[in-house]
Length: 122
Image (cartoon, rainbow, N blue to C red; front, side, top):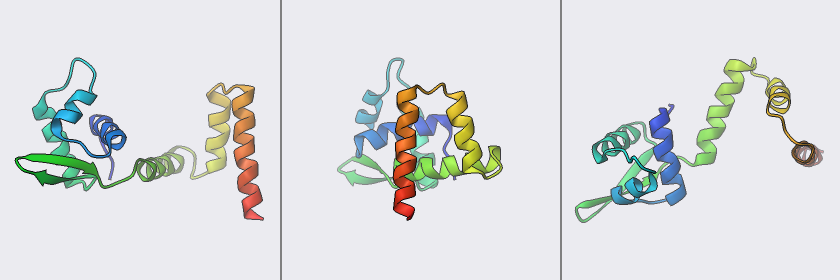
């Protein structure tokens, strides 16, 4: 299941905070802050999608993510590669390296990562 843009923004705050009360989430937003009812609605939808849960702490709820940022974006990226790059990670890598205007240093770093992965496959 996928998150909307607003849900992703809220999840990013929650991933960063790890656990948070409504006030903490509100404070994480820049001005103009969304209404607390908006945040509550997003949290409810994210609970329904099983991305977020909470623990009751008196009258307050302390929210926490059920899905790690790494797992969410890994699935998101795999879907992007499947839908836009013919399910070919190589096509994606080619597009990424050509269109993002990476510096020589960044390209060398990517090459190093690829070389490390190739060495682990041996």
